[in-house]
Amino acid sequence: MHDASWFSLILYHCEFSMMKRIVLIIDDVHSIITDGLNKVGFDVVDATKWTRGEILAQVANAFGIVLRSRINVDREFVDAAKNLRYVARVGAGMETIDVDYCATKGILCLNSPEGNRDAVGEHTVGMLLSLLNNLNRADRQVKAGEWKREMNRGRELGFRTVGIIGYGNMGSSFARKLSGFGCKVLAYDKYKTGYSDAYADEVSLDDIFANADVLSLHVPLTAETKYMVDDEFVAKFNNPFVLLNASRGPVVRTSALVSALQSGKIVAAGLDVIEYEETSFETTKKMSDNPDFRFLAQCDNVIMSPHIAGWTVESKVKLAQVLLDKILKVG
Image (cartoon, rainbow, N blue to C red; front, side, top):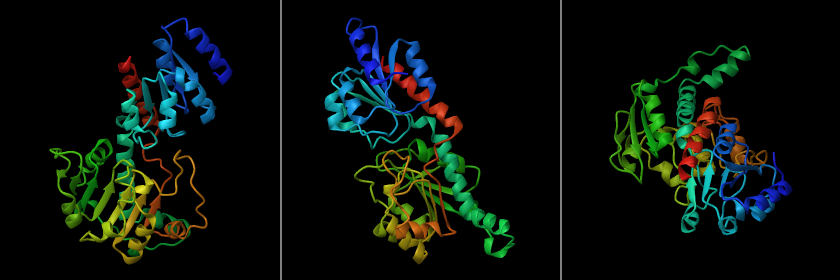
C-alpha cells in the first residue's frame, strides 16, 4: 500500500529506469488487476485514499490509471496527465470520462462491459418476472398473514413484446436471457445496423412505440440520452407498458415516470438506477423530501435496486480480468 509521500519516492527512482511504468489505482479494484500489473513490471500505486487534488498533483508521471467512478476525468485532469497512455474503467459506462478530449491527447479509454453483461441481463429478467407476477407485493402480503390470490394473478412473459433500446453488450445479453420464454423481442440501436440475430429483430424506434408492451433501456448516459424518457416519449407508445431501466438513472425523467404510472400508461417499473444517484453511484442525493421518489417508494408496481444489476460475485472477477487483458494489450 502506498501513500502520496511514498509515491514521490517512486517517481524519483523511476527517473532512472524506463523499465518501470506507474499505474495509479484510483478506486478499489479486484486484486486480479493489481497482481497482473505487478507481475509484468508496472509500479502499481494505491491512490484510493488520495483526494482529487493529490491525484492531480501526481498524475503527470502516470502511464495509466485504473478507476471506477470516484472522480471525473475531465479536461483539467487530462491536461495534468502529461504522460498518460490510458484510462481504464472497471465497468461499462464512460460518462465520467471525457473520452473525446482524451482522444485529442492520444490517451486510450478502456472499459470492460463484457465482464458484467450477463449479470445485467439476468438482473433485468429477474425484475421483469417479479413485476409480471407481483412477487414483491405477494411476498409482503403473505409475510403479513394475508393470502390474496386473485389480486396477485400474474401475466406470462411469453405473451409480451419486449422492446430493447440499445443493443450493445447489455441489451443483447438481456435478449439472450429472454430467448427461452417465447416472447417477441424487438431491438433499436441508433448507432448500429445489421444486428438482427437469433434473439432480437432489428427495428425502428417507431416500431418499438407501436408494438412493445415492455421497454428495457440499455443505453449510455450522454447529452442525447439524458431524460430521453420524458412525457413526450411515453406518449408515443400505443400500449401501456412495463419500463425497465438498468442503464443510468438520468435517462428517465422521474417526474414523467410518476405521471405515467399515475395515468396507467406505464403499468409497472423496474429501476436498478435512479435519477438521484451521485456520479460515484455509491450514494444518492437526499430523497426523503422528494415527492416523486416518495411516490415510487410506496408503489407496489415499482421495484428498485441500488445500482447492482452488474454487481455480482462473478462479475467482479470478470470485469477485472477483461480490463486487465485490455490494459496488457496496450503494452
